[in-house]
Length: 285
Image (cartoon, rainbow, N blue to C red; front, top):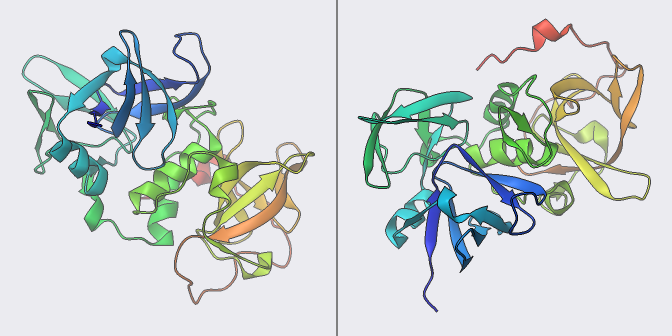
């Protein structure tokens, strides 16, 4: 059976649970991201994302069919856009691009998307040049502070908890699933929270015991996650403590490690300390 390949044509295309414009948006396909077309229709195509096998329906006119060579390059060694917001500019048209978008045939200044040539002046890097390190993971994640929560979202107009973790992990060449529950089956178990290190992933369950939330552990008893927005809250053995609300908001289930072990002090302090004001949470990449 012949494979059909495509890339995200525009800034972000909704991936829906059904082939209907009003169906639930389960995720988004960013510009240049490669997918397999499983079934092509006049209005919608059923697609499978190449990094995580996530499936859904995308409008046919928001996909750009491509050859296998381009698909494999975008899958295996893409150039990633690193600015939260930027744009690619052609002779007659420009397109907004967001963090994590993939720039086809990028040479440092120019790229080819479809049959058009564009210029890109923002920050970008080849995946082979990005280090698989906790420090870089955290710096990328901090760029998203204050972005609002949006279920299924993967852009600076809105993002959900698992999407943020998956997106920044992919930038350091770690591929993990799209949902928190599926993500929790990857990596190595950290038996005791006191042994956790920066960059570990903390997973949280609901009253039914189902894992439904994930965040990135930071030094000094903090966690970066998506609550009402991308935020930094206090973290201890029980879970996430929100000082604005004065209560725990998420109950800790497990901690997993995807990155190499580091010879560093553990992330938890002996006593929980009140976080700095929001203005001190700005990204410092």
